[in-house]
Amino acid sequence: MNPILIAAGVSLLMSLLSLTGLFFFKVRKNILKRELLTLVGLATGALLGDAFLHLIPESMKIIESEKTGLMIIIGIMIFFVLEKILKWRHCHNVECDQKSHLGEMSIAADSIHNLIDGLIITGSFGVSVPTGIATSLAVMLHEIPQEIGDLAILIHSGLSLKKASLMNLSSALFSLIGVAMVWIIGNKVNINGELMGLTAGGFIYLAASDLIPELHRHQSQIRETIWQLITVIFGIGIMYFLV
Image (cartoon, rainbow, N blue to C red; front, side, top):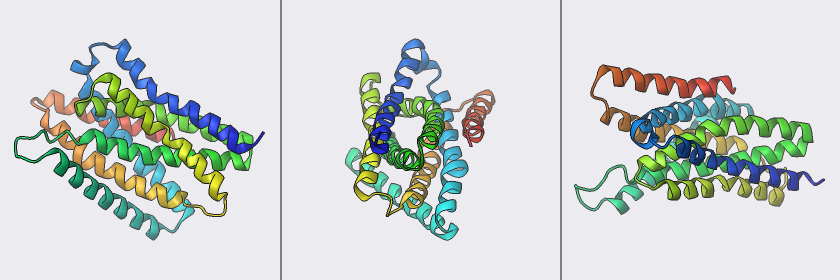
């Protein structure tokens, strides 16, 4: 069977993992009130862990370390400009909600990440079917906790559970664009290293400039601070054990 078709089918199935968070929230009906910030902390750790433990090392294997560093800086600057544009669009006075842009920032970063997943999955199936299956399993294990955290970020930004789930699914479908890119350009042009660096920069910016300040805004006791730290470390730990 054509590896492109296999990769497309796998990517479509992987996109449905974005609905994992919907199931999680449905089962735990009180999570929106009691445990939302726990998932924001988990997402913070997952983004940082993914950037520093997965994306950056893999990028350096493909391109020079200096170029990876440059891509990270460019990624940070891209998301800095993107956030400025979103804040300007949402906030035309000093009384606006400063977190209203957070969901769109998360969707932008995750869309690029899912695009890379599509590129990586398709490229691995181009090597061999067993390699493609192994890569797909690794991506799947990586995506499940991240999708729950992504949905938490969208809900925290003010979206309803239904709308947040649909936006998360639309972001996940960007993996199919990655498949299409490999199909169009073939294996002659390899931009995985550059895309990984750009995504790492976006994830670092999102975690450091948006999610961590959100955690700071909601701490009132030392016990809550310690719990937030634990959730961030746990998110990093998940990414570490998936290396």
